[in-house]
Length: 542
Image (tube, rainbow, N blue to C red; front, top):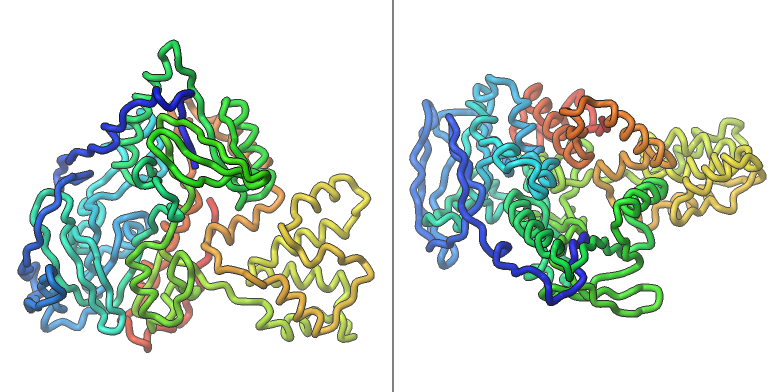
């Protein structure tokens, strides 16, 4: 959690600017962009007319639960084209549609549904919050991007029935215009709805903290920061920046060297780290934190508190998860290596933060792995054979890579100081290989038990976390090389950065699924679940 704080709680600026957000539009030759609104309106049923040539639609009015009347947008009559519905207007969904060929409408009927009629360039949100860029510079109307490849409905998906292949969508009720709901049938669904902020149920977060996911969030924070800076310039106020972290180091999910480097950058910038501390509650102008080591509680005053503690499952995904027995991940929907949702029979693809590729477990292949590694056929694995096995198997079972790196660096040239340092840095938080030596021998049963120990409690990892394992022990060198490259850029280009890993994953997944649709006829039936000749999705960091 990132906080901008003043030295006294009583001197904190008012929160009036945080509570107001006006409707802002940007004119375009193709469409307007609605960036925010404040009003709610009563529900009103709507009939959807047919649009376009050869796309006559049958509209049926139905009664739903109280207060929610819907129209049904059935599939076009007299056409065999599968209907592909895309949810979301972020990196994954926009990349998917942009990567489709121009004549894709000859093969599919594509409909994009999103409550936001613009694409947001999220890596530049900090620039809007700090005032170095204007919001209009980092948004683009959806219709400008999709062209004639797809129809666009500005609506929020409220519910999905995977069995009937239909969903309920409603025009956003917060824009001052009467809302309207309708049912939408699909053959194939591409879900890229992202995630939501994770408050962990902590009291006061929603009321007193700023989030940092949308253009509205950036605008509110920008106004608040301006007030804080003005307040901090007064004679009786000092300026402070603190970062509260639950673990004993920042960026705890990354390599320790990256964490140390980041802490050094923060220290030189005058940013105080409050480590080993959990947030107990947030009040108006203060946050209560508890130190995990000595269980002491401290109240930290602030002028602005930014909540950046991670992500939680989108409520829409939770609804889908409850209807699919195979889905049990705590934050996203599980997919196979082709990004098809488990339990959907190939009718639903899930991209971006909404998805997690289920990791195959090495223990299920323990016998095959053992036999392939036992080159001298003595029914035992030596340390050298075990290290070779882990190296080769980590290309498929990525979670073995850190253990392979640790074991190899620990047992090769351990008298060398560099190897000792490498072994320490590469060591996983808990490794069953710690006691292994050159005399270690494992039979098949022991090897299977070893893999069980490694994979005990293993969670399915998002693509970004999978790829991060490839940079074990390289954190500081990687960051330094990046900074050197950025310093070498021309002055007018030094504000540019490579896309963040999560953004790259979403974009690459959109491109990948677009190629599947372009090169195959995907109808959402079990017959098209297995795509002949298709390679699994593989993330490549750039």
